[in-house]
Length: 286
Image (cartoon, rainbow, N blue to C red; front, top):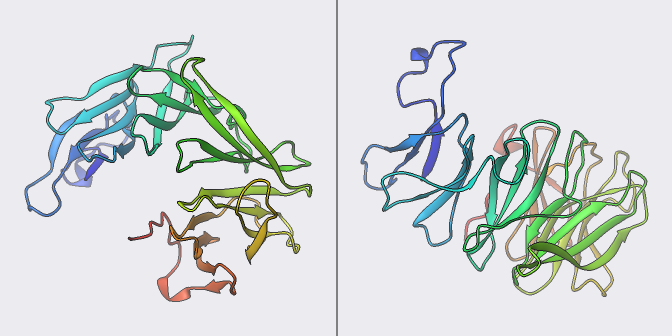
């Protein structure tokens, strides 16, 4: 496991107002051996994300995008914060593509918004994803990797709609993330959320609105050129709730307003009060 903090000592040892750099640690959870300190981050250690081979993880800090290999003595700088712009950039890793070479991440200056980008590990290219810029709006474009290493995005074209689903492919020769296919998910004043692409090729997403109507809910599609199937409902929302689809498309767990819900595909929406309030950051187990 990789984690960051301001040290392993007692919390009351920290001095209020003191400028403290984040410290990065790794620990083998089944050995009982104390955590090993990897090093100090320049500011905050942002979003450690493991590669699927489990030998290394990436993270962001004030120096740029970093990689730590378990066999190394210190992190390696992959992309400098000062590359490619007038202002230093911050990177927040999100997830790796199935091919193991492309990393989805946030990229911004730390002020005035950020956008999502793809980092190509072998070449070091950073490719900004169109329409992914986010400033201060409550709703924004959401992305996920597809099983064929493309990207599936859901977004509203304007505040008045329509809601769109788009797929993008990475063109390394052009050094760009390029639009592949587009489908209109809804022409209503509504916002799409929670994109997912399953092993069987089906797409899943949600449609949100501040006031509930019969269009609000969770949807699945066999393909972009096939009609959508509404598989459950959603509650009204201004901000997108946390929605995590099951890997087999059988339903989704939803965290909204401090409560936990389960939405089976083709069933009723269940409120799971027994779990307790403010559950979040869900991960389905195999």
